[in-house]
Image 1 (cartoon, rainbow, N blue to C red):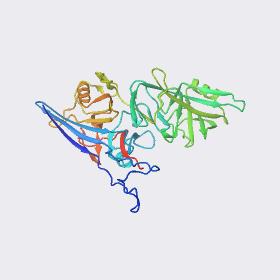
Image 2: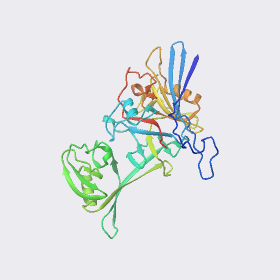
Image 3: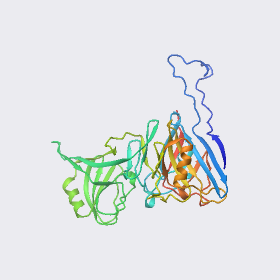
Length: 380
């Protein structure tokens, strides 16, 4: 078996001059009133691992990010400003002025995220409770199995009488009856083409109730509550009235009931490794069988907190056959990864470094995807 590792480190932009020519040199010790400038280390470390033996070849691309570097920003993003739609990874990479990017997770029809997605104070979609969620809090990342709870709280009058509405669907495409809440992130309209009742909330106040038989507009300065079915309509009519204050309240809890604090959150596919142990299943609802070799994308965390993205090429004889789930798990362990989960794979597997697609997408070209992770430089 032959292993070849080719390393590359992110190029650094020319450092801005911190002091005018008549000021102390950067190499001089800082005065007591000055903070020592933080050295700008590499924004990422990229390398390609290849393996070649009889009847098997492999090309695996590894992107490591040190989150303690104050110049680094890592976050998930969707293809558009709203939740629906697809774009090429190269388009999202350019739009966000990224230095590196990797394809994201799974999605429903038309690009709606397949699980929890939240970033910097805004909840876009809720957790399914079926798969681990990758969280970032300050400069630490971690996986957690969680559930997201969303309800509406309303104030009926000056006497302080309140209303609470639970059992609602949040930014989900309606497939049945119930109460649905839509924020502007969902899109401009609720995409409902059957009879339903809407409560329009603008700047925290219910402006009115309106019945519609077609897609209804979501207010840009608030949200929309849509009721489908007789029971849901009666609930909405009995609990909401024009002029009342109404807000969305949500929290994310672990399976033990602890509240999770985070800067961003992104739901992945099945776990591959947990606490240094291989836990990859034989199949996954999103991926299907994990016992055959295929292109794979994974995200993992090392003991020292380093965030690692791995893109495995596959279905290309002579270049890379791909990996099964268990084969991927073994190789992630050799990289020092203690926790890992799947991202979308197959023809969606793609990694861009310094503006170049470094892997070989299995379809021979880019595939449009719903989300990705971007790495970019933080402007100081």
